[in-house]
Length: 281
Image 1 (cartoon, rainbow, N blue to C red):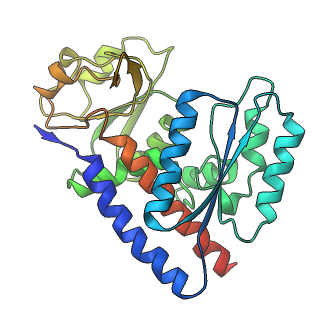
Image 2 (cartoon, rainbow, N blue to C red):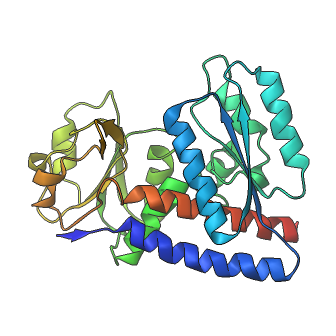
């Protein structure tokens, strides 16, 4: 069994990004990322701070718009519009989830597709579906980067993606499909989850439910990617019961230290892609 070390790979990716940022700065171009956080969700605040720290590490200029929980949708959309028009800002990230009184779809669609470094805009999701992606979900692209780094072939493999969300499940399924995998997506209404997972060469679980995937559900030699993350006391756990699954898997991601660091690294990668797009537009 081999641990898929996302922390180590993310540092390598970020070192490469740091060089690219330096080259841009020599040309008088400072890559800029704007992050919008509405409310005081502790997990969201933690994620935004981690992203800001990563930007600082590689030299990307970042600003954090912390907005009150009670902000109106109209006001939030006006903040996004101003960032769309700001030439110093190449990428825009709206930290999800948003308060219930705000229409998440309208907010996601308000971000200019050329600055949508999260890859959530319908334009970018549509391009991914057609096999001609521009910006791709950071988590999904981070997982693909991890598989590539460990020479794990997906073409011709049977893959089960557990979770059908817009952030990970759907873009992950599309990416794998585009690479020649046979993909089955499971969700809360799926019957017989265990039987479906048992036949998979690669399992990607992105639900956020502790212990959802256990060793008796995994076939010998399967590759297991754990995207789930949940606080448990002072520790963090994923969807996968690491102890029982690791004895059967050929490759497995840990939680923490697997997918999470790659998500942040790919956000920085997408920010540089946004810089390139702005120069070629």
